[in-house]
Length: 454
Image (cartoon, rainbow, N blue to C red):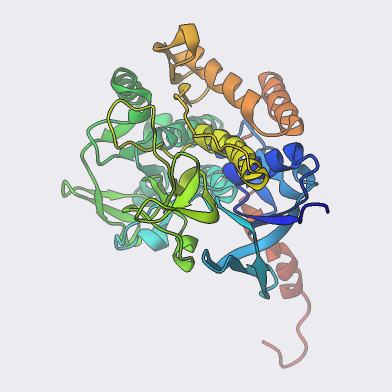
């Protein structure tokens, strides 16, 4: 009698979820599986290259990996998690059309990722934008160019200053990368406009800690801080914002910074969709898992058929010298956890031995605009090697060009970089695409009015 087909429900089509599904497709062999991937988007976003999207180096579509095209052996459901009962092994999903479907499963994978961490700071909701999605990266690209154009057209000194003041809140390496790319973009835009001068640009980085880019280690963190200040960035350490009402940033130091553009990169938190499940959660709201990637209860017992990977999971780092320790939320871990989990799910179904997740970091690469960057390598003979500027920037591009999912996307990204050498980066604002019907509606406004109409 052939084995019963088992359904693997993967909640989230990000880095971790994508690689779980890919692994199951490739390794299932004769094991009958119904692989279902649930995500509200039709694509996975390669987040490490979002700063290059914002900077105009990489096309937005080139960091979007189609789930249906990549996961041809899986069923992709567009929708959001409405509930999960790990005891009954059932899940409900709200599809994009608003309908709710119920899905039974044999195995569920929590791979919902993380969202931008925010605080109830007055004015933040209305005046800031995050930097975790393709849409946000495109928006910031357009926003910077539009603000430069607005400043060039303004005769009001205060309005001009506000338009040319850009504030980034959060000095992790993602914030530093985003700021560096957008700052360079703003300089290019100003140079192309005779009505403006680069000295009018003001970029401010606000960080609550006493350092920036801590992910690259103390030495390179200091190098990054020095480089930012050398490039004219106003870096405020050990500083927070207490209000952003009407775009007037009140700092914890008491200073007021009027700015029309606020970009928020102050960390991430587990996807709040987890609140709709009864999965065991840790102190920071992650799904608690063991080194085998199994979801575990408070007493340490594994929940049958429940697994967790990626940014929404609290997974112990058994390689760390000091315990307890947990793996940080990054693409490096999400990819490898996804690959291992596919093997462990199949091993569980087949009655084979499960493997623990153990991974020593390969290091960190950060690009701070063309020719600038910082990299801490932990690869074999290169362990502990620190790179700065051009070598680090090249390492950053080489790594991400190599690991972005699918051959199609690798080719498009690398080819785009090659074309940029000859043509330069993209400096056109397409802000009008945010309101595509505006011109069409104006055409109706131009129609002759009937007698009596206003």
